[in-house]
Length: 428
Image (cartoon, rainbow, N blue to C red; front, side, top):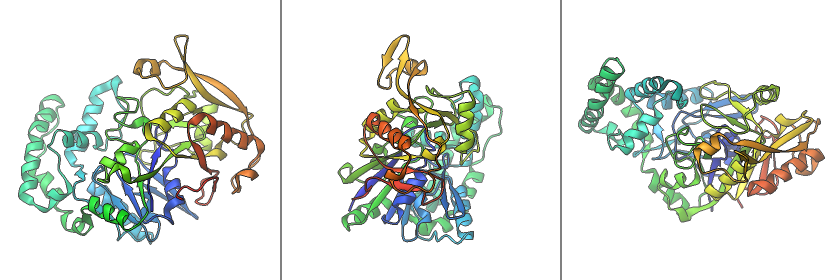
């Protein structure tokens, strides 16, 4: 049975939760392999809407074992808040497993995130202020706190002391903040230990055994390709690998175990936070997409920047990730537009680029080259077969497929759980 990686093809918020939910009933394990509670998935089940930030979307599907793997940074307070919120609504969360090697977001990580971002002024990255970047920085600097450390108080205290030594100098002498004591951090983390203990596992071994036993495993990426720390629009990126390669390092499975790589892409483009965005709209068209698509962050509530579909970015995503299938979402948002522009290339200082420029400066100054497609007015939210879409909607999808580097295998036509049509099977 397959191991499937599901990632975002743009700057996030493409609807990965919906795609995960589509596959959920045929999947045994859903694994979150990167990021933390700095991004969210919104999943609509009937009349119920669920906003997930740290938990894998598969936790909403009965029978699925959700995994928070080693590549994730975990805010334990947020973890329990989400679990309690789901439990209160009748969702079974007992199968959740958390990697012993996942790193922990502490109070000092959140504090450092907020004060350093504020200190940057006009050069701000646009972080969520939830401590994600500082936690990954500590991981790379080898002064991080891991889940397993909560079960050895002596080790935990030593690690917190080591981490706080430098940070308190920064907080007090540079940012004019109070020092954080070792005791307050240790006491806070230890307060979660006993409740957390039954959830903790060697998740790399667990996933290996699941694949050997013929189970189907879905690896669900947080954020998206253009926010990947290596392959995104650096420095306006997240602090982890949100591309398909991150599924391997972030979960502990071998790369030869991956069978399919699915990228979720909107029928237009959005972005949250700072950074270049060639197709961004500042007129009524942008407001139309934002309002109709309800483009506000699941985690932060921030209004998303909106623009037209960017084919060079889709091709870049297909190449970087080895995409086998695209899931196109929010096609219904475009209903009612007379014409729909699509970015097919860029122009930088009079030079045409058919692919994403490698230079950050060139990409920052890139002007979109558009091709326009006729729109449609028919309501498509109840359509469940591609052949039943309006002709112009079919043509739009086929045009995107031809210029995006991989087949479009499923199409989202509305916010409801079942509002999706399938052109090609995503598992077999």
